[in-house]
Image 1: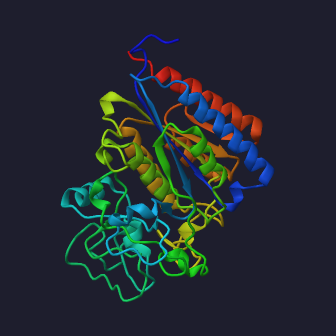
Image 2: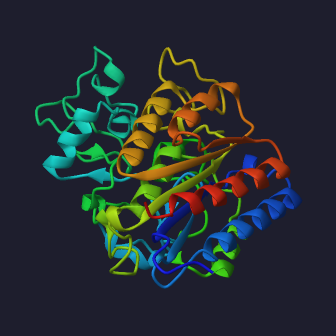
Length: 360
């Protein structure tokens, strides 16, 4: 029994890549789900009326599924049969555009979504001809293809928690939208709808268990939406006016589970038609150099916003370890190779959360 006021409220977002490589076998997946259920249950047991625990689950394929009930967030009417999956978001406001430019995070979507586009600002290349990468008005965009995921002139891919992305989102349609659509007609792929905030452990566990294998994985999209699910800038956007709580009134935790396998950056966000940018050192199933830069910059933004970031990396390519170690908050990175180490990592997470929730 805890004394009243001993703990601070907790906002916890758990997101997991549900690509085929993460579903090694059905039995292994079921065991992993059981471990995640234990995690949710253990965190829920910490909840008190004075210090509630709000939890979410965000399954990630190539795109994020915000739920078909949020069609008002789209820039145009939802197409028939839309399931809630959205393309990468773009910021609109001058302040956000300035922030993106100042951050030195590459404008990867604006740079690469169509092959007829010549953009010198992405990744510091000197011979391009696109002044629009950071919202400038005098560039030659050359947007003469039919790729619907390319941003309008003057917009930048949104790697922030700014809410200006609402009403700019585009429905994700396999075989039609995004660079991944050139891989085959089933891409980009999207999995189950995000769940939360809630204290319903059964609903969260069911969402994890039912997350079907989907896609090759866009880590940046997962990070951006995970941040939005805990950021007070998005208060009232997730079905409750008091969620997410202010930074000073709750602890914010994001937990990421991935094996870092992806081919997305070979088709979009820097690459095209299965090829990475010229001179890139990445191999098949590895994030490109530009993707590494983008992910690390976004992780830093999230941590600077007062969010504790845990990363549980399923044994992956050696090149993938360092970027995800850097992404995690100090001491919050775990490399897991099987069920025992996965369970141990989740147990450490729960123990840590108990500690960080203690009021100073």
